[in-house]
Image (tube, rainbow, N blue to C red; front, side, top):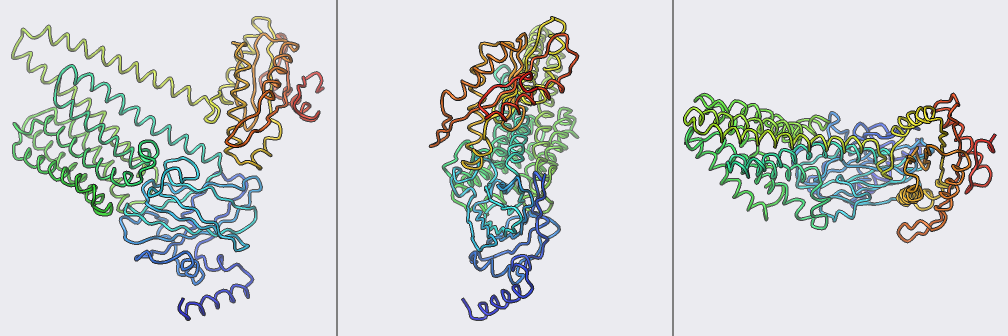
Length: 612
């Protein structure tokens, strides 16, 4: 190390000691991130400072020294998208955790395509913890199996922790950093899967629908439409990190190559579909030649991307997408001006797609900030484009059918049969969509961890069961179940083991309740479960509760190398048919019985009568 740098570093440390403040905080140009009690998530962008190491030669020690001498600068305008850049980027933030209940947090880098991310955590005692992620490492290297790189970090209460992150990639440099509690991270992943599930559900429905039409009609437009849907679906599957998660988690090389290669396939499908749908060979011969040229360029770029650096192939593939979409719009305008009316819907579809594609391209080059619109703009635009293209295909087919009817009247019966067949196919597709909607609706009423019904579904059904019990003159019993010492399991073995215990307990309870077909089991929250037993009086409900308690302690819960004994305390309350009580009041009484069971040593059953 040069002598001047050593001397400067010593002066900074002495000054920090004199001022009575930690060196890291004094040197940080951004305010620290304060995690107050109740915070579920926090963006680190307003608290980040950064340094562009253009030659990628600085070590972590160099970065710490630069932080100490204020060598980092605030993120410009709160924008963490820098476009395609050479070298490495260093990011620094200080975090103070004031939440006594949340010691462990998830740091998520919400961009799936960075090659290498190195995280350094420096604690007040000087201890430094290092972690690594990125798509140059196997997917199994991530803290949590999730499409975005993530790190499970420890933030002790009241301590200032320095977060230093190094990012290097041949892809677009986008580093949006977010802190989440484990529960908030679970909600994030669930919501993201839900949104993408809807998107790919739309694509799948359109694919199946048009596949049936292609097999029936043998129209080349439908084939290239299917090719375009499949290729573009793969593009987004790759850009969103799902390909690396599900298709090739142990082949990091494919994670980079798949991006430009899938883009080239999508452009080829796009141009081939445009050629056949717009009938370019007949209606616009010169435009047909341009489309062939674009297809040739994409074939060459796709082959070259197998060995070209990602930093070269992907920007060129992105530029080719914009050129291809613009050219397709131009060709549609020319054909429309020449009197081909199906090009009108085609033009609207590609205009929507162009807007969505432009957002992701602008985001990749760092021209716009990362937000909900720019992150999901291409999904929104492409979904609308696919829907409009499907309508355009239907409109085109109807136009051709009408023309054939004018030319040959004898073909009327055959055309009517085809219309009836297509109507049936539409109904079938709608039924599939309705069934998919029903399944999505049911999944929204279930707990993502255990698969049991959630608290909302329980409340709705409990009120109905109370009303039904009054009408039938039968009692209904309520069981509140709380796993004993569950917090100590989380503290000792970690939340992943705790999650295994919750799933195991839910399965054991469900097995014990199979003989009671009318019962309802739900996860009430945390380690608490609730059971409704229609038609059970207090005596029979206590018997069921005892069988549940024994079922839990019969065998240990196995989680990896751990074999844990899990028991539960149970509170039982029976609502007589003549009782004027609502669901909240019944829950309150059952909860008092549960606390009585916990107060009497746990692993036991207490009723509302004994609790009183």
